[in-house]
Each structure stands twice: as C-alpha cells, then as structure tokens.
Length: 309
Image 1 (tube, helix red, strand yellow):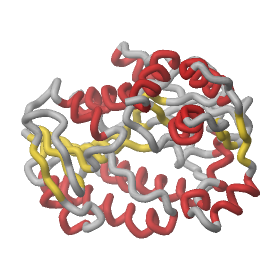
Image 2: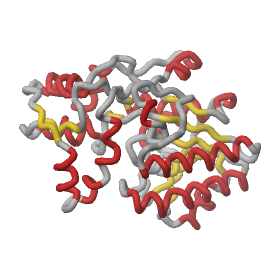
Image 3: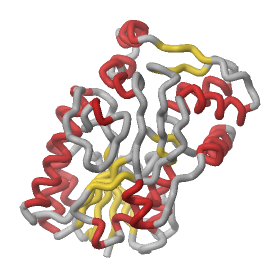
C-alpha cells in the first residue's frame, strides 16, 4: 500500500520521505513540483490550493502525512486551511486512509508555553492559533466519532539542514554568515527549546507506522537542554567562529517593517512565545519509543554545514 506525503519537498516532507523508505517502497510525493527523494518515489504534481485535487492525491493510500505549509499569512490561512483539511478528512474516510497531521504549538494556551505537553489546553491567543485549533478539533472530532483513524504529531519551532525558513536559519545563521548581526525577537534570555527537523521526520514516520500510536497527540523528540535564545545564538556563532553579535528586533520595528514586508506583519501576534520560557516536553514519545533528540551542538553543526553547501 502507498504512503503519501501532502506537502512534499519542504523542511519536514523531504526528510520524512527518506525515513518512510524504512517501511515501504511505495511512497507518493504530492506537491506543486515534487522531486524524487528515493528512486522508487511516485511523483504526483497538483496545486494543493485546489482542494478538488486532494481526493485524487490520497486515493489508494494506506497513510497520508500532511506536512504542507501554506503561505504565512492569516488571511490565506483562514481561506485555505479549513477547506483543505476537510477535503483531506473526507478523502481519508472515503478510502479508509490513516491520517498523520504534522502540527505546531500555536493552538496551545499562552499559559502553557513555559511547559507544553500533549495535555496542554487548546486555547490559542492568536488568530493563527485559532486556525490551528480548528484543524485539531476537525480531526479529533472525527476520531472520537470513530469515523477516522488519525494522529497529530506536534513540533516546537524547528531548525535543521535544508530548512532555510526557520528563525535560527534566517535571522541568526545566515546573518552571521554574511558578517551581519544575528536578529532576535522577544526576550533573548528566555529558554527556547527547538526541534531538529531530522528528529521530527524520523518520529513522524515511526508514529505513522505504529498502529497503537493513532487516535492521540504526540510531541516529537525535542531537546531537553534548556538553552536561552541567546545561548542558541552563541552556539551558532561558535560553530561559525564569529562573534555572537545580536540585534534585538522590537515590536514597533516589526510593525513598521510590516508596511513594506508582508511576512513581518504576521509576527507581532506570535511574540508571546518569545517573551516567556518556551519548553516543549516530548517525554511521552521518548518513553514509548526510547528515542531522544539530537544534541543542540550536533544539530547546529549540521545546520551550518547545509548552509555552507
């Protein structure tokens, strides 16, 4: 049977395709311009914004992994995410396909950010978080009604090789590589745990191929080392052998830049995550599967090597 990735080619989709090779040779990569990761991959080119194509993309699949990331814009999320997820759910029910949704922490209550577990309350303070919460509810409501076999794999903010869209890559590593100051949001002296993307992909593949892992929430392995954002910057600077110079980016500047750079306009409502400790607990996965996260030093080394290619 086929295992399908909706959102192939991204920071999670690509390493996930590599990991799924441990379980099957029948991997379908779905995206606008999918490219083979494994020799036997089936490429399925669709515009995933066109929900009418979702049914065809999922047909015949044993498991479908949703790792897609739509443009980081609240208006687009509001328009695209709910109908897209409903189309995925409908197709999964139609073809008896198991669903694995790769999610973030936006749906959790702000009070949970200093220590997040799978049982943290779903009470998002942001508009983007409300969208993620609605997706959570759509999936788990179908699970509770025994209409769907699904799981949600959650990740903290992530970093890793071939992942240029993460904050640690864009705002820290790439700036330091260019001789510029690292940029930081919020309070850089607050703890911030990050998920290493190859760890997230490996865990997601394991979960998707473990029958008793379904119908629940899982946090993918994430470092237990309680580094502050400043310490992450220092770790990256040390690997680059440069001074860890830092430029704080205040909220007022983000709002001003947002007038000219749409992406920046999306950041202020998420700053509550950077102004307090951000600890993402993955003990449940570690105890069940005996796998722990990659050490930050090793993850940062691999990140820098990928940026230097």
